[in-house]
Length: 284
Image 1 (cartoon, one colour):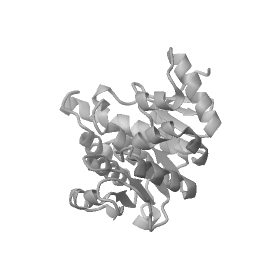
Image 2: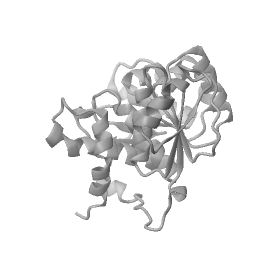
Image 3: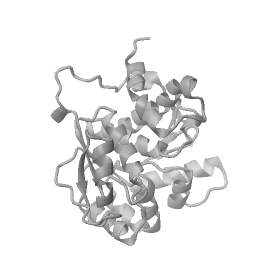
Image 4: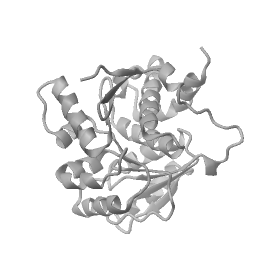
């Protein structure tokens, strides 16, 4: 197994793209976030808001009917398309062509949602981020992984990773199994943890930002939004994943002196994204 390559500011600056002063929202990418179910619309809110706050020009959220008002009121900048079902997603139809799509935060694992995920994967051609319940559904239907496009970004936390690759007895076995999984399905795996690692076939990258404050509900939903935003803005998947985890961790490093570990919540990640971008752009 190779030694991990560190994701540092120096590394990020090799591919980081400052915003063109003459850009407009149409050039900044249109992302779609497929998220939410009854009781978990917050996941859709967090992923959508973090997507917008990471520089994406337009964000459309696909959610069950019960999420409509919540999203329109909590994030007026986001457009909303609803499923025909009230409480969970059953039939994904996206009336726009997106530069990147995320699926999974808070969608639940209802049979209707599982079927909708299968049908979506069968026809989708856009760059993709798969998270949360979409990963859990795939772990129960492993043959569907063949439908996942090359260079799709998967963002499992340890339990979701275990469901996908099976149990491991040591750290090195965990990495070996994840590398084998990445090679087999030609996907990028963001292994969320302390620290977060990114596996791209046999290459391992270790993030250098972040702290224990990120161990909080909704933290992963915001990471999904950030990475999807960067994909929609035209970053290659490997760079979107690296910059995404770096920014995500950086928000917690910036906020920690004010919030401490205990009071930091996922909304604080979103609040500090602007400062994280400024920190990357700061000439040291």
